[in-house]
Image 1 (cartoon, rainbow, N blue to C red):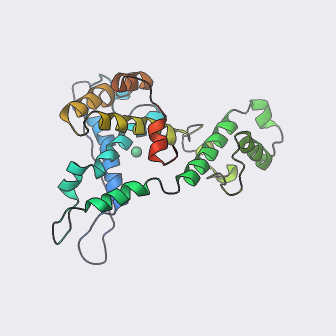
Image 2: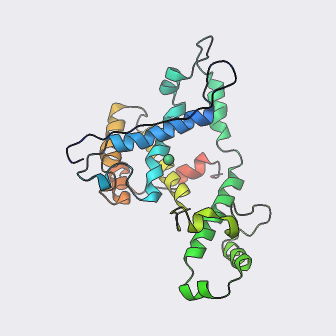
Image 3: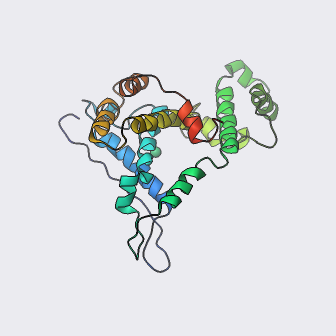
Amino acid sequence: MRGTQAVVVNNLNVSKPASGPTLLSLDEVNTLFHEFGHALHGLFATVTFPHFAGTDVFRDFVEFPSQVNEMWMLWPEVLANYARHLETGEPLPAEVVEKLHASEAFNQGFATSEYLAAAWLDQAWHSLSRDAAAADLDVAGFEASALADIGLDNPAVPTRYSSTYFQHVFSGGYSAGYYSYIWSEVLDADAVEWFKENGGLTRANGDRFREKLLGVGGSKDPLEAYRDFRGRDAEIAPLLKRRGLDG
Ligand SMILES: [Zn+2]
């Protein structure tokens, strides 16, 4: 970028236990891989202007490469490198890894529905015309009818956030962007599938991901960059499979 190399720092705050060595929970390891994915996005930037480099991409695209990087956390060759018993040095048993994978689908029917309800509600608020928004609006009524429109007015699965305490709708810079979490995951799951179809952890695969996606940052239409990498548009099937919703 303008003749300088990118400098990226990852800081992970880990709580120190009352006694004994500091170990990482599964969640913390996941965060570490995730944030390192953001770091790679910045480090591999090949564009001219910082404004388009690395993580300077659209909000609904920025979490995608970092989510892909999470795939390596439980990848056998990677796992064997770092997940060892503190005292015996034994690697994490394969059946534990299998259970961790199996647990990924736990409760996803509920979690996906409550999330989608909130994402839809966010879109509904941002689709209101100025006149309708200015009128004396019944907030609870508007919310109920928006959710009924897509059959998610089910009291057993309430929306993750109700309008009156839904931060992402109007503040925090999201503004109609709450959907981006799952959209990033559509790309993520589809990209992970590509790695698996093509031999997993290889230099060639990493180079391709680096060149076609990480390197170009925001200098290219994200879907075009994705197509360059994947050879086609993203498909939803890998996400449904990951969440156990494809049955
Ligand atoms: Zn992130």
